[in-house]
Image 1 (cartoon, one colour):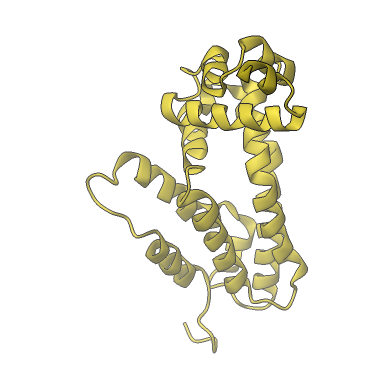
Image 2: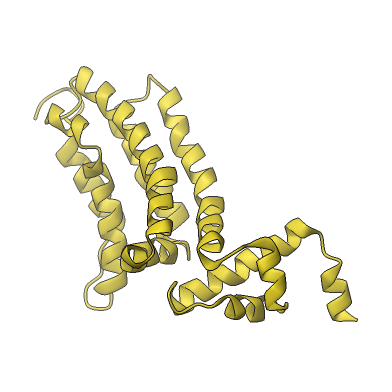
Length: 206
């Protein structure tokens, strides 16, 4: 009876259940070690049902990451429309969103997997770069170009390397994955200190 009820679920609800099961499996086992049958078992459905929604494990992972990243990118992208906001405040908002939506949630495991296993799965890495990294960098380029024009940057050349702004975020993931058990890294202090290295203090005195 329970199985028949499950089969009558709305396709979007079923898809959401599969994605939730995949998230748990990837976080626990890693991308390489997770099999489609593991996801099916976690979701309590047949393996064939998973394939009805996702052709392979790469597509499953890509759709999972895309669904999580889209609203975050939308929130970050909203910063570009706020031309009057100081660049430091905009970048601080970027760190705040990252901390709230990734670092302090289970979503950090997905980024950890991409860092650790991405080279073995170029399809996944290419998607992450094209759909997430490039869009984030595009926003940061606009913000930093404005900052350079307004004299807000200690070094205007930073506008040409927006990857620098991402460095503390990535560092926080790497540290949490490898070294947190040995020494705690205060992420907010890391972000605030890095902001001080990027931007001229209010009033213009360095």
